[in-house]
Image 1 (spheres, protein in one colour):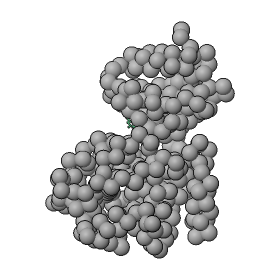
Image 2: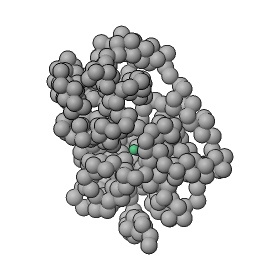
Image 3: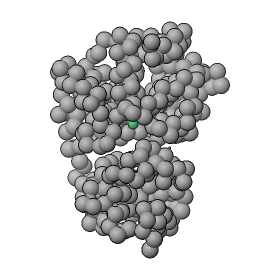
Length: 328
Ligand code: 5GP
Ligand code: MN
């Protein structure tokens, strides 16, 4: 039984595709998008990749990212059409595509490919599997089923998706299959060490100094079961850094010995705070984030709360303390 037969039937009948992923795109979103593009090129000439936010600096080494449109620029071009088929990857909720949702017409068929267990199944066809490491793994399966010939760039994109979403095979979503796919990529001659270096060991001087400063203001709460820190607009300006430079910071916050939950608060604008949550062993941060209209995975989730930085810090940390059983 072919798992992706509806995709095959749909791509055969359609002439143009729109591909997108979530706001604040990450390695899995971008890698999956590019991998999918390489597969779909066999079926159509018009394939537009459009995102609400730009591709982060640390992913620009992936070839094909230069052809990804930013919604604000794309919307003004004559390129825009009513797409037959829209692929949304690594995105649990259609609203998380941001403004790109405006490019989807009522007649467009949506194909939803994702691994978030809180996925809203908003597609005409939904391929949601929360047991896989990453959406990249699903795109790899799709390529195998369609009999696509793996090209180098496809392999690099999928390897980047898997490597980033498993944090270099460190996170709890790491599977034997994720390792097997990377083994295949190594056999294809793909330089995974280079991908890892590009993503993790390529810090901006100003960004690393920002991280140092944030970590020197690390706090503990909930009888040392919670560690947290914040990045304000002032910090960002002081170090002349940008949000891309905070990538991975929440993992350092979570890595304090004995801590279950690590939290990073990011002051995106006055009264708009992005909260990144990570846990180590048992606390379901996605369920916690749902209470603030956010979501994600059990060990990695996020939400955005509209209040001042100090208010959000206080509210989130005290709620976490109480949910973890430390009522102060
Ligand atoms: P991050 O903290 O790196 O931004 O996100 C961690 C995980 O949570 C990712 O899987 C991301 O897609 C998800 N996530 C982050 N923020 C939100 C949000 O506001 N809503 C939902 N549904 N998921 C989010
Ligand atoms: Mn993912």
